[in-house]
Image 1: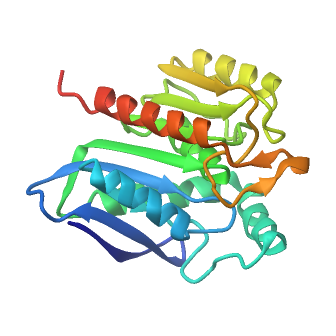
Image 2: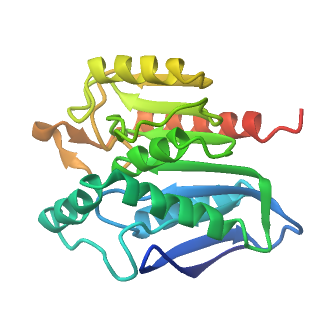
Length: 240
């Protein structure tokens, strides 16, 4: 039986409220997978992804980086909220690190097995957490945005990274895919990219229906990317 509940935490001068999902029929600690939200803020979309992860046996945490009650009502507000953090990528990283540390305190968390996934803006968040060098097992970026944070970070990226992307995504062009590959290679990350042809931005979102803007749900890419994520986590959480 999958249970969901709100998870409030404080830090960086703010109060945050995410959602936790777990399978109550299982006993003991389990790997943790954080879910970073789109530019709209933590929503039912991320909660549904957390429930899907809980069905796979994980402790899933749909994080909140905007702050408790700060959820966009429209695209204009979403851009405003997102840009507040994009102007200060250190502040964004601090909020991600806070969420990472707080969820590890949960009684069901296997703190040796942690990961993050993210969608759109959340994909950027997931990559930023990995770029910080934090000891996290896996990072999955779904139709994310790739620009580096500009924080002069050094050292190896410890997390294995899986990027799932649409070739026709207008927010991260093929040249950006190549640049990310060079960046991850230079920092000795173990990385993989699956790029889906005839696929634009937001391909996992059933409500995405703006083909003129390059944003469109793609059932095939959605299904394939989720299956690839499942196999990826089976690998990174393996005890071998």
